[in-house]
Amino acid sequence: MAQATIGELKALKLENGVKVVAIESGKLRTSGIREGFIITRIDDQPIRQPEDIERAITNKRGGVLIEGIYPNGMKAYYGLGI
View 1 (cartoon, helix red, strand yellow):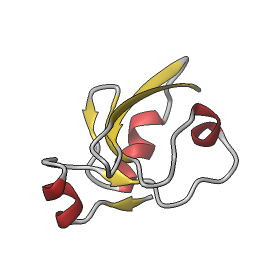
View 2 (view 1 turned 180 degrees about the horizontal axis):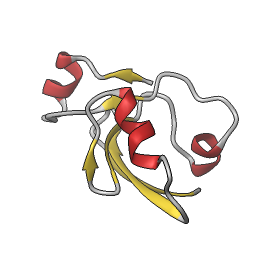
View 3 (view 1 turned 60 degrees about the horizontal axis):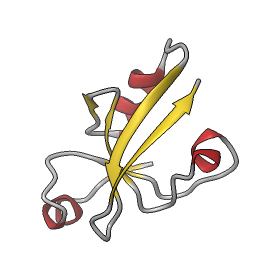
């Protein structure tokens, strides 16, 4: 994960986001999230930096809703079981 650049955020009219730069095996891959996806919110919490992702999912039970957008402008929502 990496903080999305100012240019990426501006191009997509976003205020915040963390870009998925590489996906290995795990829950993100099996959920369908692809590289380049910019995570903007997890369970309605804004994601501004990679550390926000860990904070949003730590001690969660059941699942989380990940919201974001791809570089082509396509918004997407993913539910992950934790």
